[in-house]
Length: 308
Image 1 (tube, rainbow, N blue to C red):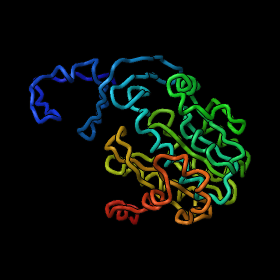
Image 2 (cartoon, one colour; image 1 turned 90 degrees about the vertical axis):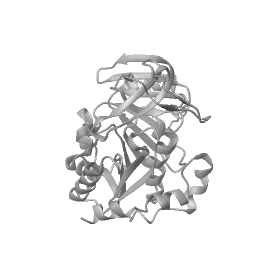
Image 3 (cartoon, helix red, strand yellow; image 1 turned 120 degrees about the horizontal axis):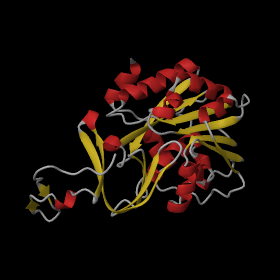
């Protein structure tokens, strides 16, 4: 979505307590705004300039330089990541799953072309291979230029890149190929719809080893509870034994509150490894044992929803 103008006068409360009625500070070109029409809200970032734009074979890819959130990547006008807060998402999408598995050696990342999840996975010394399966190679190449801090492990000898259809890749994988599958997808629209289906989760089940773990991004508990419950139902119907939804703050995503849903073939999500964290946690900025444990706790409205 392109930056939006503001019609009429807007009452602006400034940090010094003064109030103005000017629209100049919200003028088009100064702010990137993603509007959530269905939920009557929006998220805006003040920008210095747009520094990259291209139409890839799959989507419109844009990079902005923002005033306070670092670089911003959008796909088809929707926020994908910001320099300021992406570490929370990437750490919660990876370490929660890898610490739940007793000995994760083979990891697949479906999506995640910005390479942030790949970087976090490769912090685990026991991982022998991490394969990134991304539909749009341009996302990775542009990330290497504008988000080098996320791509610093791309040359790790354990990192492998497969650019193509992740759904097809998982469906054709040899049974038991992976210990952990991480689905770092966009919202469930367009090509990403299939990544939220029972059929895809069933293929993940077959591609996982005996103690295999699947984790997927599952949207906002305030705005998208129907999606979360659908993900959980589809995972259960696909044959996973245990399912847990973890929540965490993510201020640049709709509502500022996000989730990842984890499914396992045999291991209870509460039985994650604590002693093994010592090699990884000094390298994290958000994830630790207390955060992992707290993310498994659920507010009452989510508990009631999941019990139905």
